[in-house]
Amino acid sequence: MVDKNLLQDVIPPATKRSIRDIPVPARKKTRNGQSASQTGDIKFKAAGPVRVESMKDISSENLDDLNGNNYERSRQIRRYLKIFGAVVILIALFILFSNLDSAQITIEPKTVAAVISKSLSIGDLADNSGVFELGYRTIELNKEVSKEVVADDEEFIQTKATGVITIYNEYSNKTQNLIKNTRFETADGLIYTITASAAVPGYKVVNDEKVPGSIDAKVVASNPGEEYNIDSAEFTIPGFKGQEPYDFFYAKTKTAMSGGFDGVKKIVSEEKLEQAEADLVVLARNSIVEELKSQISDEFVALFDENSFQFGEIQEKQYQDSNDVTLSLKGSIAAKIFNKTDLSGALALDSVIDYSVDEKVLVQNIEDLSLKISGGELLADESMTFTWQNDEEDLRQALAGKKKSEFGNIIKTFPGIAKASLVIKPFWKTKFPKEVQDIDVEVLDLTAN
Image 1 (cartoon, rainbow, N blue to C red):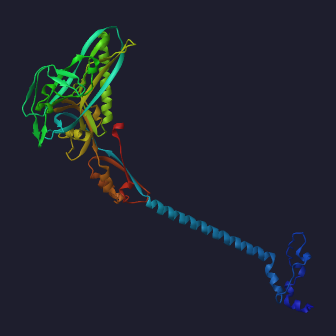
Image 2 (spheres, one colour):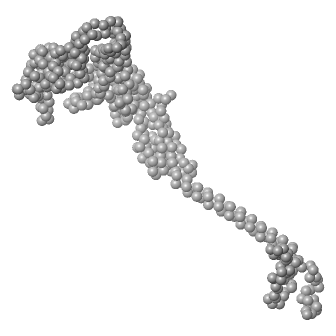
Image 3 (cartoon, one colour):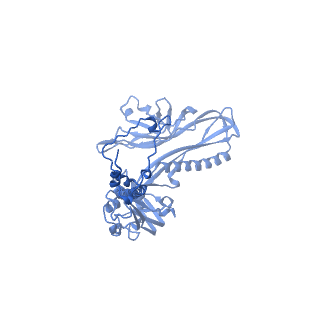
């Protein structure tokens, strides 16, 4: 038994409390609802002398203070973690955007309006021996168009096909005369004869190569009939057969052989034919121009006039079980193709203020100019607006890695730039990106206004 005086000596009288004042922990219940003490599973065993005064430390007031301090400390830790996380994110974003720097340059090119009145000597670039101010390439296109008309009558008709061939002489360097009605034969045995005598020039030797002499001649089929209507063929001269010149004189179609017929033919009145021909010429011309524009890139412009077009004869196609006749027409063009920059520079030279030969300019809407070609000259007499062309890659190279403050001085070294603006990202960057691909150059399109 514990001596009562011993407990009194341990607990001072001023803080003396009954054992009833000590909170009793809640008892845990087992699965069957009984408390641990009821089950007898929990046994208490003293581990040593009991220090009763420690009970004072676990009073409810002290527990509240302890929990409050822990909560405040946890809240401060969470606040510091949030601040730290935000700083880390800002640093990461700064590093990210610093590595994603870019520059956007917008330039307005220099423009000058001038009235140009001059003529330029021009020549085909394929002619290496020519001397001219401006060169061009020749492009040839052919187009066939058709329409149907109602026949007015019919009659029995026999006609022979006609066309044009080119005769070549590789046999001699002397001119060879061919008499009227000289026969030319296709591989299929069709015979055509020239309608007039022809003098075929002898061959020439250019750069150790034989260049045959040639001449064009009109031919007519030996017999009527549609089988003589052919688009293209090569010909031999039967009169030379068995002789050495046979292998060195030959001909090729320059135009199709057409017009051959033998039988009952539906007749279209002259009035209808004239109207149909006028309609077909316009249709063929427009089709050729559309095809021509589709075949040349934006770097080039095609110059032509009415004399650049050629049209064949109206061809008729008959139908046995119909009164409709199909009228067709073949048209062709030989257009001169100029480089836009070369043409614009030649027009500006000695005519536009501030232009020098080493600069690139471009005439605005150059396709709409009324430039004329007469013989070996190009004639210009109208108002034009010239726009300077700037090399965007050179500009990028000049700006890469430079300080933002140097932008104005660098732009001044490009005489073709009238105005320029700059946006560098991110905004705190003071230099242009080192990589040229990170510098974007936009050129304002002044023709859009």
